[in-house]
Image (cartoon, rainbow, N blue to C red):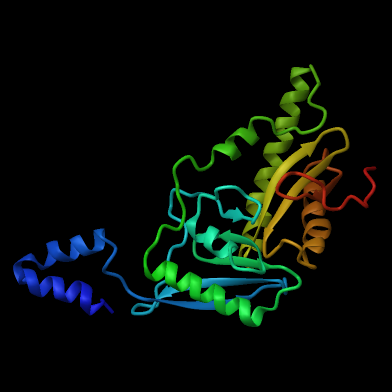
Length: 261
């Protein structure tokens, strides 16, 4: 429903003939919108929840990320100057560990010591206020540059090989790994508010390193996803792959207790 103090008053002030122009002006000023309702969904990770927004009047899903943002966006407290005002606001709430913005949902992972009862209330209030006021969700200028830079050096360890054919082989392996993860893994985990980011391939030991994000971060089920799902699939299709291991957003290993063999 359009807010009376915005659209209707503007239309009555300008007359029926100018109604269309008046409404366009209000839309441009962000003053003519439908209120938002939020649906909270549990995930396989007890420390993470998904929030989906819908317009109250039409039950239509609210788009979180614009079309020009091709990948889900992951944010954490130590990140400096995050390009998302929405994520920055959510991360200021005590107990929030990380925020993942999808195209139609927001996934929030909490600290183990925090309780959902009070935290969920604050998250819902912040999300609703931000979306109702149509504040900027994410700044799109310059997005994708870090990922592009990362793809220029996909090999990780063993980069001192001078054989051009080895370089081509490694790039081919990386391309196949990323393609399989994008097609066979990411849609599955994204449906539960998570995501998987390929970090690097170590050709010296055949290890693929991935970063589990959103509800996958710290999820008890993620070990099964990585070891029984992703690793077995990649080893089956790509002989060069020996194992899949997890790391944090900086590429530092999270499963250091395992053998490198």
